Length: 186
Image (cartoon, rainbow, N blue to C red; front, side, top):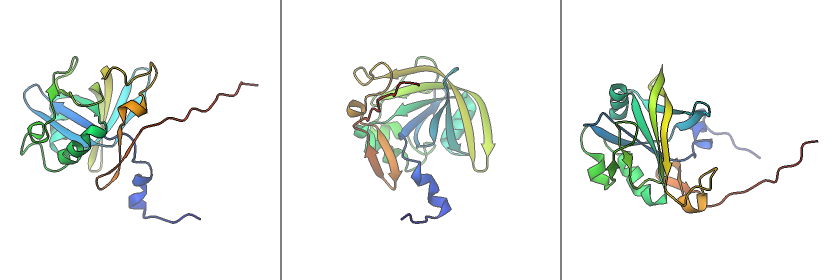
């Protein structure tokens, strides 16, 4: 038997994708914020989509630089992810407060986070205002992952142990995979 939930809570049913820390900046200013609503959009050309609340510091910095970096958080960053979500980067340096290390990206102005499992550097190619958010479409211009956490085609969950946010500071940690055998085509 299924139970009904409030429509406003429906996003919790599918929101447990990887919890990412979005870094933004223009070379001088920088910020880091947990943004769960990030996803691949296209493979060729490689595009990512990030949904950011209008008017927050992250939004302001993306508007200025037209760039952002998606940092994939592992289990080791759970406390920092929560801390980055409390307060505004306009008011204090979230990197200093959380102990996260900003490192110069190869292809964009915003830094990536040294302690992250992987990062994806994006240049904004389109944006769509929608209610209280802006949907940013970013072209992937560089992507890197820690050595030993990539098997040549995907991230290795047992090594990366990525964070997946459920709600209110509760996370699931990815640690295993299930491979379904392919059936021959008739």
